[in-house]
Length: 632
Image: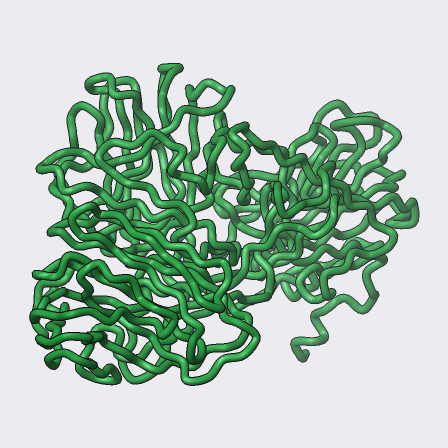
């Protein structure tokens, strides 16, 4: 007998393939979720992983750390390398001006720029003997924009000639280094484009893009030049002989209210994972991206420093201070919901000098804390520090592209005033504070962690999909439902139910056939995914108040998705998972008036909080061989 002979000879009376239907639902089905359309000012709380990608990071300059290659020094000595850099390496350069009147010392490179395009130039500078330094972008002769830093004051100014939207930021780092960024938009025409970096006595650049002054051999240190169109100011794309562009999967906001979410796995280059069905959830954090709004201890949070998984410039850079052997963290209380009981904290993180971060709860009461430490190079949970009334329960991680990880940690507390805490860490085995639970160390003023999409769900032991919350108030996403009413699903007192559904490590209804007129928990056939890599079929006979037949089949695979098939007929029941042995039972009745199919949902208000790829209903009770073939 061939393998195909083991498949059912009859076709299903209903079939929905959510992983290959192009993002469509059978018109006989009803999907609902109560939400409002997203706007730019207030993004939707409902997100999904699309099959699209966005520009995640970029550097349009060559040799971004080798200033003697692809760069030329004008009116100055050749750059001297092997200088101490902000990241602790010896990769910075010393720039030295000539001595003479009417000089314009500058390091330059000629990138390819586009017209009417916004660019952000970021360079790390440190005073030598020069009192000031500058960076500039020239789009054409007489058209330029610059940022000028006063090293002693730690302040910067900027201006443009023929450029629009000119602005700057300056950030003081460790060892007297500064990060200077310039953002400006080119005119409608570009030619002879240049990037300039140089020392100055305080004289501002002219429309040529550089200053002219009487030099006396002044010096300045420079490192890490980056030019991009994303608006990012974090230096995350060092280059050599080619420019850098990195793309990542897009975590999108739904386009219209009530739109179903057909998701794609960001870790497998866009493989479809089916339709996502979730229950209601609330992000108790008022600022999930604007982390500069959080309380801070010896740490600077710079909003909009890099592009996050949503493709927006919404990732904050968390940079610990150089305070000696102390904790460095940000913390926030929930908005209105008391942080007590079970708390699941999640967020998207990326290394930016430091490869570790902790997520946790506490309130600076000695001995009451719980922190979970994660690696941002592997995404692995490493360890936790817990004490007093707080404890660590579990964790999970998910890689989402271009160095970004979603980290999830669940805690328990018997207190009612706990804060939510995030802390970068320099190693996999730091010392933990016995007071607050976060790592203690001396920061270098440069090494950081990027963070966005921070979410706290009170009373839940797992993290749901991202709920954007940046209004200062907690935000709720409504529950989803997917069902179909059709009395022809089966009418001969028996049938079969087949699903391919996600194994999320907890129990949920994958599919339910029910006599909708009888109410909850009566006259139904349900396939349930269990937390122990098993599937359970539960059948209630007409008018029954309890299960007339309930039994499970163990998985032979135990992977991220289960294929489950069951049959039900009077005194003839079977269930099979992943092509394994069919579990059977020969006693029991079945409902005879099924007219409704629920997917990932049931009348009691529960939801799957999982992806479902495929559902099929057969009008006859299939054989053991059929069940095994359909789930292999």
